[in-house]
Length: 140
Length: 229
Image 1 (cartoon, rainbow over the protein chains, first blue to last red):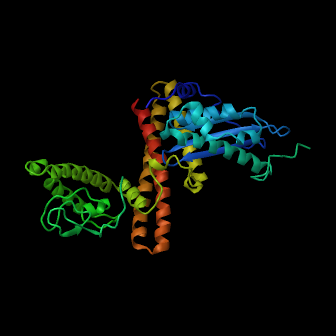
Image 2 (cartoon, rainbow over the protein chains, first blue to last red; image 1 turned 90 degrees about the vertical axis):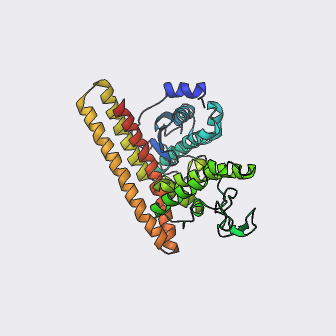
Image 3 (cartoon, chains in turn yellow, red; image 1 turned 180 degrees about the horizontal axis):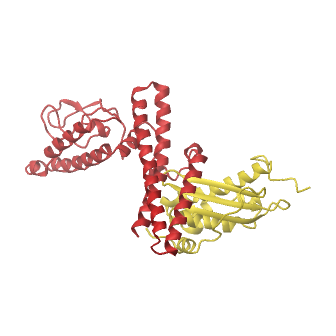
């Protein structure tokens, strides 16, 4: 099974690898893992408290090429979106974009979970209910 | 794929029509070969499905059945019997490899009892308790350390310090693996000897331990690769 060109591209030139300050109020961190294959993925977002726009997104993934490509693509896609828009990203969108074969679909699931976990962490930090639309009180 | 049936359900031997256990490869009455068994792997060897398995008995039965399935013995048999001898041999080998290995055996037994583990479930959305935060933090941290060591090694070519820390990391990961294996064996006994509640708790523990083991196994693989490179 060969990786698609897009997977290879993301694997060789991963976008947005790195770390954001975990303790910052504006940063949400999602750490997820796939117990069946032993992959682990961390995705972080930095959200503008006024606009709810994700201004920064970073990831670090220990896993196969598809897992790295999925998280790399996820950070590209969520940057510039509002938190609510980012939640609309589905793993199937990632599968389509990267042409992932069926055995690698779980990598895209992991990336979607990572986005959700990061946003969930940010919401928790900022006192937004998990299911409520993100409406943080702007800085006083 | 494996079908879970009650191995005690008798079926008729195709040759002598005497009822036999559906998991046996040979008819106990007329000794004729039978189509591949439909029971679980343990029943193929006539063994009780146990995690604390009698490995000597497994070995003995495997060799005994292998000899009986040898192609030379079917040189003059019917086409069906020839075909069955090949299919039975494949089944016997799969069953032996699965049961002999303590981890494969644990996974196999848990799957028989409904645990959703193994590659075929990797596409499913996981039960969140399968990836507890503290385990992920630990594994992520270990991976970060390993990456730093690898980079240090790439920079400084044959920096003995970097090689040393990698060897130490390898030892540490292997130690953690051994710890998991010890814990698994403790759960085997709890699972086999406990009541229903204990059994359920042990099953959950074992699934968690196998998950942890996969993360650790990857770390050992990566550090070994780095050291060998």
